[in-house]
Length: 144
Image 1 (cartoon, rainbow, N blue to C red):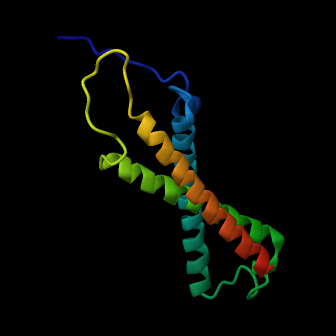
Image 2 (cartoon, rainbow, N blue to C red; image 1 turned 120 degrees about the vertical axis):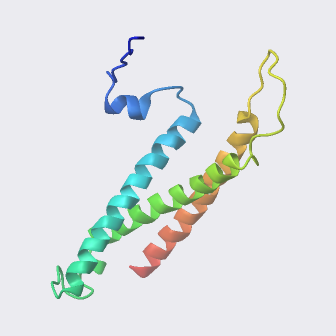
């Protein structure tokens, strides 16, 4: 009977965040995970607050919290996370469907990768996210 080889994760959370090659794609991957978790946390908090309000428990008076700067900043951070996560998610869907991979080639040295196609798409999607954030920030400033 063969022995099982056990590989311990000695890096812990840092191995989850920082392992591997440190290119732009890796930072996009980490930020995509973190924004997804942040949006999930906001969604869960929103459900709790809404369910409390449905039961008649008001955590703050009507409209007072929406005008406080800390709530406005939090609202903008949620919008920032959503804009990035959505644009990067569209990029990932395009890559998974094969639109940003390029035609298959024989792996002959010097190797060419699909990064020549994927990086411009990453830049394009980040510019789209930046445009969304600028529009949302402008709207936030106008509403103040």
